[in-house]
Amino acid sequence: MTTIATPIDSKALAALDDKLSKRFIELDPSGYFLIYIDADAGLLCAKHFSNTINEKGLACDPETGKPLSVRGKNVRQETQVFTGRTAKELCMKIFEDKDNPCPITYLDHAAYLGREFVRAEIALINGTEYVQD
Figure 1 (cartoon, rainbow, N blue to C red):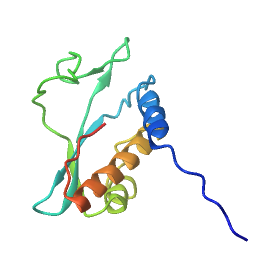
Figure 2 (tube, rainbow, N blue to C red; figure 1 turned 180 degrees about the vertical axis):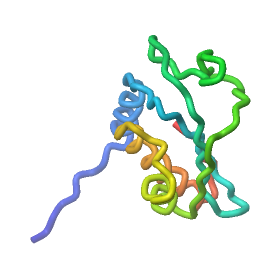
Figure 3 (cartoon, rainbow, N blue to C red; figure 1 turned 180 degrees about the horizontal axis):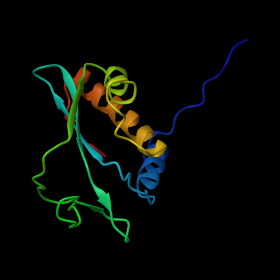
């Protein structure tokens, strides 16, 4: 049986992805991650930071109670740093470590991290810049 592939409309997929990125997301009360690549070491890295969520749904610094800025620099100490050579290895360290509880409480947060780790892995492999979505 011969299958004729339908051409993929990359512009339509990009528009859908952009639209979905603008949806409301309830923030994980267990914290957030900053993801980056250490190209020299060949590693994907994820720093975890704790936060609290206020009555308006904003992520706040647990020490000061002040909302965290999404722009500019927040100088905060991470609670943990995770590294891996692949997205799968990084996910296993975060989600499957029997000695440390998983710092994620929302499934949509876990799914987002998985997608971002794959994007970071592709950038690492291709030697391109990675910018967290």
